[in-house]
Image 1: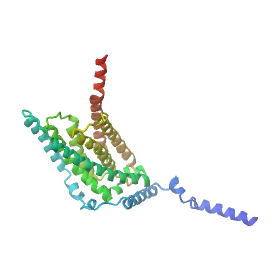
Image 2: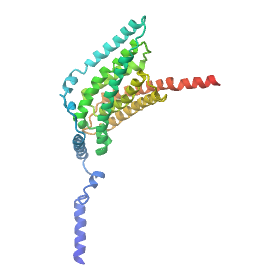
Image 3: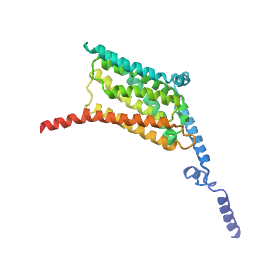
Image 4: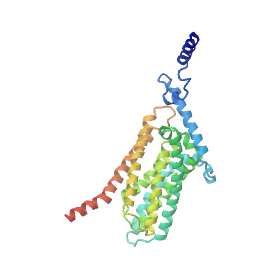
Length: 314
């Protein structure tokens, strides 16, 4: 009997001397408040790197996703995006004046091909980036996708972020179709196209980890949007609620973009969380203005006509 008591007392003393040693999983779920903060953050950084490595093992890159890394070149010449936007705005002015006294072109065939190519590209980008982000969320947590930049070194993310930047230049061609077909060119259209290119170039240069969320959400929305544009150009009937759904997704994207930026700012106090005050400022400014402009567009396009129709019927 005395021997059993001594054994129990001995086990209790060992537990006090090595808390959590008998339950190694408990230290991960409930970290001790006495553990040094830098050590916990270092552990989180190591965990984020491990999750990124596991993601790379699960989501294998295709051969075309292993092309030469263009980031050094793009990071050095990112300011050239200002010149591209300046030329873009100048061409808008010149194009509208050129078409003022001319009849608009049909361009149905080129528009179908244009929208179809962008739809296929956006669908592929959405599948690859959402697959990567989904694995990160399942094997890690939201903080690792927002805060730690280790996952943007993944070949899949590296490839599609580079293509994403180039696509923002190509998508400026949307405006050419509007001008040449003499369709109304709204402020939200050219403002959104030009500022997205500038901010994408800026975020790409700084390797902001939350930019992966911005890219992933944009791929998803554009996959649906350009599919709709393709069907519309081909005169294929789609549900009347479909364009309303697209605008709603765009508004949701702007809200989530601002939310991710705020999370990045909250967590940026922790060492290893890659963020800058400039990035927070510009992302919030742009996403808030986008939210206001798209919400206004939604109200004027989908809600006001219903109110006017209801008023006339009365």
